Length: 233
Image (cartoon, rainbow, N blue to C red; front, side, top):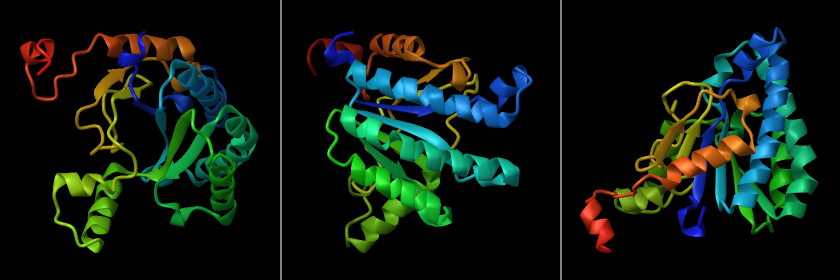
């Protein structure tokens, strides 16, 4: 794939951990652990591919409704992964940033986030954004509030300046579901959306390359005609 066809911003809804575990008669916790390993692989592959920003949906604002034991395990796994990634991400030149409402997190999780963000702040190869306790409607609301606080007119351009991340080029959802589940609603307005049946723990570099090949074949018109694009319009 030529550099001109590589999406600048790829977003992934990492779905299927629980079903992966269930199909193997393993506890859901094992599915989530394998999901972390899949994220490791995909981050490395995305950096090699030249993707500038990778945003992943780790924990939605609706996921608090899951069984308390599972939520507790997810928070523990999140904090452990953040601390484990500090040195490898920094060495790889990958900057990590977490978006979402942090107020519901424990001190342990918030400290792990802060430590990783500080340790990787100098990364220039790629930005890894983890959406945790995140919802697209929350993001829009926060941006509108910040726009108003800045005394700016509520235009799409001004609100867009305060969204948590820039517009998405390619949105990938694993697990066979065909919805975006309140993820990056504003930023995905013109995203190419790729759905795959692969469960997240099975997703790897080959799957990412397949999504990128699919993206390369898409025509990004943004309201224009194909003829306009061919003529440089």
